[in-house]
Image 1 (cartoon, helix red, strand yellow):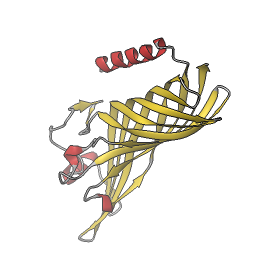
Image 2: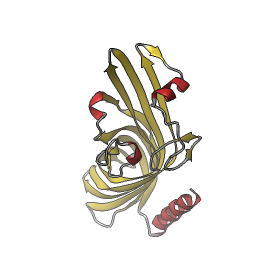
Image 3: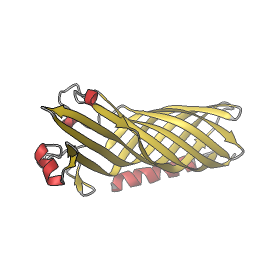
Length: 230
């Protein structure tokens, strides 16, 4: 964690020292979910999970229509799933959500056409905290946590990839890598944009039922901000 913080600080200072033409801040909303291919996926209903997104923005614009943007962000991602199964006449409904807080660094190409612009490029993220929330009902009766463990919905062993994670045992990779693309509009020093990010990292390898199963983040971000400089 200390190494990541130091690397982020060095990254920001380096950008500022190379005559970064513009710098500023942004903030907004994340709507996140997962791309997945598991045997359980057909039984599940997914809801987008809302979270915060914000941080610092740095731009280099060496050409009239082409530039570079790098960001150092706090980004909340995750997903929410509901599984409704009828087993031998018993109705079992499981609600599951994963909430992850990431430090995220996108490095993007920027293409500008008048007040409009488009961005695209990779991002790297590292989760600094997170939690899982699981609830279950059987024939309409809500179960206590100990009863959910008995049903096998909460892991009861100590085999976890990262061990203790923010006080909870979470079997997920902390790192996430992917690509982003978006569009925005600028007015004087202000800007607003819409962006889509697709994770390329399987963040949940150990929970799949087969080797081919995968779970990858995707995020829709709506943000606004302000930039200073030329």
